[in-house]
Image (cartoon, rainbow, N blue to C red; front, side, top):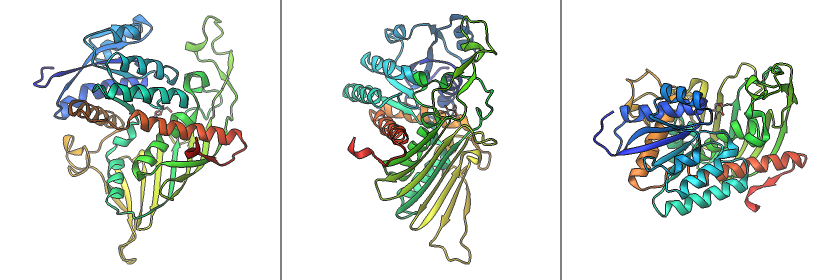
Length: 393
Ligand code: SOE
């Protein structure tokens, strides 16, 4: 693609589900948005040479590397996009920032608070030299979520009193669903809590503008052993018969207090049969309520309590007008956006921040604040669901 704006050469580490989503975002962003820099899909990095070459061709990457260290020595790489499991985030992100590369890192930021703190320190140091770091809490950039944030900022909900947040999936509700890295504490950090709970913690903190200050948590693992997936069976040759332990939570629920005085209930599970990717957020304020469900992602429900009782009711706002965040770049009103568009919006905001010399959000510090909540929920659950005050850590 020829472009009139300077190139931003990108290297991406990992190319599974998130890698595919990020690839399409890097490719699409400059085709729909006017960007001050043009992303170039320069290098794809992964460990299996044959699969890597095939993925690079399919996803549109010009070159490949099988060792991420080699990526960081390349002069033709300006930004490193980390789409690997959580246990590798800290090491790669810190090394990339030290090598002067901007970083986009998938969520959750890390597997532990200590790793996340080290990443924040590296990001702050790098920022002094104009090198930027951002964590990929993509759902912030769904237009309906942005509109929710705008309405709250404008005071349309008044004082926030109560928050209800759920992230419901069902992909391991079947006890015979195979083990994957997402069920391995070493690699994923935690289960539904970090994978799904991290999103709703970030969304609630973003939409309300308030921080979670304390929690009471309860984690449960319903299925303690699962069949080992073929690709994880190693050399045993017993794929399909071998079983391995699940070392993470299957479901996580917690109560929370927010810095502005609101209280919240949170639920993250992979055991909600029939719910595929249901992120449901409901916020009640002194002047009204908002409700969002990702399974109907182009809609935001708004109840204005200041309207007379005769006509008041939840208003279904179809968030597809050019006046709505990001929408003007896409299709005419009513045509709707999907899951992948939020990834494109993430690239747009990141590229604008890099070119404008500003801190992209969510920052690594935002990622750390989520990590602290996740750790507090785990500690609370371990301690028999005792109250855990995050501000005292
Ligand atoms: C799997 O549960 C998963 O891919 C998460 O890891 C993502 O963050 C979420 O967006 C969709 O579901």
